[in-house]
Length: 169
Image 1 (spheres, rainbow, N blue to C red):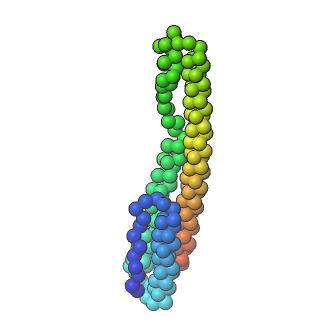
Image 2 (cartoon, rainbow, N blue to C red):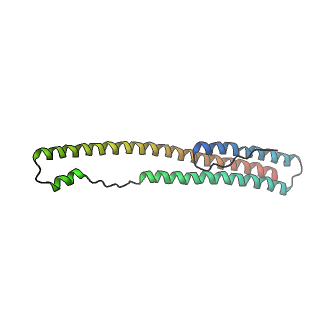
Image 3 (tube, helix red, strand yellow):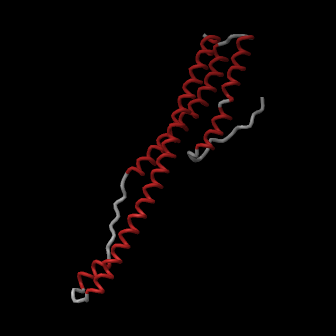
């Protein structure tokens, strides 16, 4: 049987990983075909082991890819949870402290500038927080999907083991 081998994705982009998993899980269908050939012919342990080892190595690869992506996604979520401490210096405040002899009009202008700067900083922080929350939500959804894919792998492995033990042991 000639099959095209799809290469595992180099990143943890969920769409690429899912495409790979869908294609790679067809090996389970091939496994059942191979086991049925053994069942209908000679039931030699070496043939069974060969078929099982092939399937198991492919399932381990898929599971490891999923686990790696789960770990990477968890790290990305943790990095969003870690606050980034930034310090800003307010030059207008420094100017106010250094120039005590300025008249009241200049001080009022500087205070207005400070208020505008503070409002701009608050608006920027709100936007950054909403972007972080959106990104965190996307990553959490991705993590849930990856955990589901890992569960699918364990179900497929259990089903294949059941068939294997029924035919080959």
